[in-house]
Image (cartoon, rainbow, N blue to C red; front, side):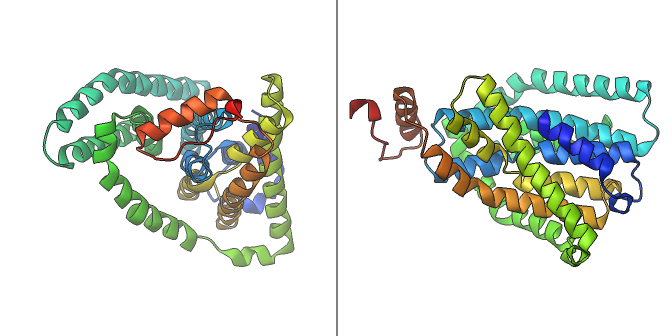
Length: 326
């Protein structure tokens, strides 16, 4: 809530020249709020895995909070898309939320069918059937959400949530699709996003000042919101800072939001460049900040047991020592 509120307030106060050609002030402000509020689950998960912190309580809490926050972000992004089409009325809002509820109901109802289809595909030889069903499900959900006036990315995200806990066999067979996605499609998308950036705009002192303000508020809002929530939830000082360190990473998720904003005409090329710059800087901050803050958080016996289960699931040989036995 805090990053979203700061983002909306920032969007209301930023210079008008940073608005896109099809933006009014409310749609622009709401999009900046989304930009401030999102977190990059892939970046967070990869960072936690590389640092050996995926089994930690804070690691699990960070992923859960990021998932919940991103669901809200995609909903608000669909609302921004509706606002760019015409004047937002109460009827538009009701229609958008009705479409959203219909889409979510269909996705939830389709979950058992998807699980059953993947279960049958696992019995076939090779990875082809499992990959085909997964890709068809993602494209169908994206097309369905777009046909309802929502962003297609929301449909893909929803199927990703359904597949977030696959069976071991499905996870193994999806490895090749994951490799192609991370090694081919993701670099192509990120390269395209980078080519749309124009860093020369930062040569203008006013644009540079706006970029510094947006970056400062983006980082400060995430840390302050996460820390406040952690303390209300009776977590320690260092756990609150660690939670903020993880949730501050925005990565490719913010780049996707920025790309959609540029396509809708809500963001100007200069503001798009600022948003992508924030995504890069905050993602680079995640690893060193998590390493520093988590070093102050003690291991628990529950975390050790979770590490054993994780190692058994992934066939790892090494398991962190149980501090309770020391």
